[in-house]
Length: 357
Image (cartoon, rainbow, N blue to C red):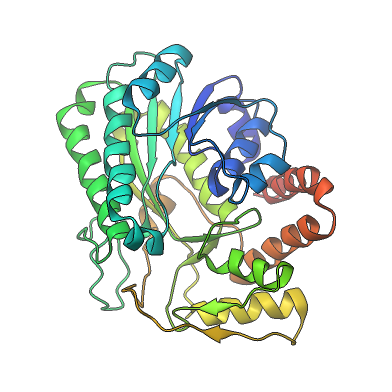
């Protein structure tokens, strides 16, 4: 779907984004702002040390922001009732595997109870047309059999984060079958692969760790160098979310349900492959990697099948593996060397992405 069709649909529509100050949330705000949407954001009050660096730097004046916890059901319901969104993208989550081991209770509360709060708050909203809930490619039961997971694969989880996302998926299915089938509100979940791109400053994520290694002279610690992941650029993922938003709002009966969004290319792209390619293009040959001892359980092999999204939504990822690295590096170079230009450059990257879709 090209940018004109996105603009035609999203212009002047009220879109609520939870987790709007995060990595994907900020880019989604930029996409929708370009399309002329009326954006309402709901997030925790930002910490200047995390992804708020990105949100703050792109100066999203047209976003109507509210700050609070997704666990505050009363406040969430009040915001939804007051603003009457046409469509909701629920991105707010505890999204880090390592943090889930440190704070399992917080992880389950945020990812499961937070999702329940959204579903409860929205079930009687007459103006609302669609809800899209972001879970994770890690929601599947991974027995390390090097299989590609489809939307019908068994759900599960071997760590608190993965388990919480599997539980969120089950929760959405229960609400859909018992409640939302009786409404005119479309309900879908989106399970994206490992997303990279400019603007990510999260803790314990591979690209932000590389940037901190370069800018702050921190050691680059790699936990699982041989782990395989379905890497893809954030723009490819968000174009899928936006595409689904259009179709779900127009035909909620046909398009409700779960969707995978992952790369089509089949290449053994391990963590260390990605690190070497990124560092070589960013700073040349002179770099040193330290391998940390693996003390937390994480899956070694993860891949998802996105045939449903390609056939049913006519979605396709645009960027190749080399292109996603190149575009990510380009963004960070501008941010490091001339941060005042990052707002303009971020918008230019969006326009370039859509120029020949």
